[in-house]
Length: 467
Figure 1 (cartoon, helix red, strand yellow):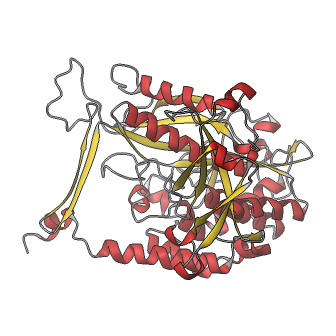
Figure 2 (cartoon, one colour; figure 1 turned 90 degrees about the horizontal axis):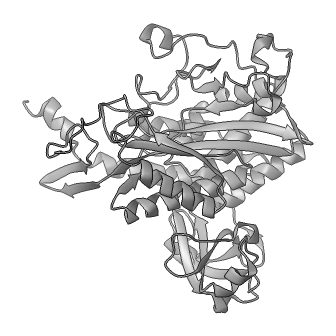
Figure 3 (tube, helix red, strand yellow; figure 1 turned 30 degrees about the horizontal axis):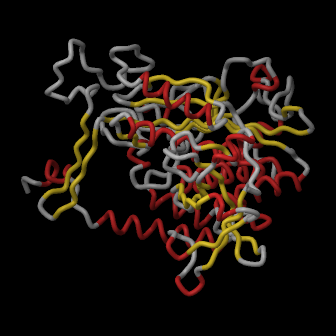
């Protein structure tokens, strides 16, 4: 077949199916399987774009999946030998498709290189998730509720194991037998390794049933590809072990939610650009931050409001962004301080290649291509326009009296979308994000909000049922 693989030639001969994958603007990872012999000597196939949210209308529905042969790998989760390929999307005739998230991410890199500022990015993402025995929900007229089942959970009354159940906000990083999913996560790591995703670690997180798998920092597009395959592995290994994996930002109102902290740095000609012994912005040189790093941070801070429309793209996202649950809401930066939106890691401080910034507000419900591309565009805007980030914050912003000193990110998806409507010029430079795409995205998300407003909430019975 004419699709390059990262497998051996012998394995290649045994491939029965080709799994063509692409991502829609909402972040869903779509799969189309072909018998391998039917794709011999082909580099694209057609599909119905009108069946994908935020893509095409029914009267202009034809789109093409363009195989990215550098992404081919044997799928370790498939029953039959299957080669998985991540695709870009085009219109017929090689016309760029401006609503394809992966194309947007690639254009962000092209724009960065055109500025001469940098020629390489490193992004490291940390998508957290929950592992449950089961989760169910009802949205009937007379029954609106959801239920979570898990042997780790404090509310599980039928737990008869000879160990204590776990407590809220106190499970990082616990050991067996309190950590009930360690072996499942190890299996996930092995499957990730089989897909060349460069896994690094796994551990229990702070919340009940909350865990994380880590992988090494990668280029922007490769990092987004890895996040999509990471979720694919997590969900399928969980299912194989009779578990349910959820990347929802907030499920328990009195426990931590799932974040996706994003580590970022720029490089040029093999040299890291965020490290320097000095800077011209009057920021303490002990932090070893270059002017480029500080201006990049300034861009993220300036555009933090509109960034949340992509980094925190659901109504549920803002239930996580509450003080006291390790989800920073204040637009500030600091060294080693996890209560601010932007943290500069305080270890390997004298190691140039390790110097980076970490944006802590995003969650794993965001489309990774759009999230990473938007972050890069905001940072580049900061560098180009020399946006000063202000002074480094030394305060614990989880203390109320300190929190009031600093601006906050939006408190709702409505507010975030309004910010994106007002502030998106930095995204549309060189048509990286098209105005058409941004408008369509905003309108779709506003419809989501309208839909959710129709449903009564169980907490409303507690608050208003006596009236």
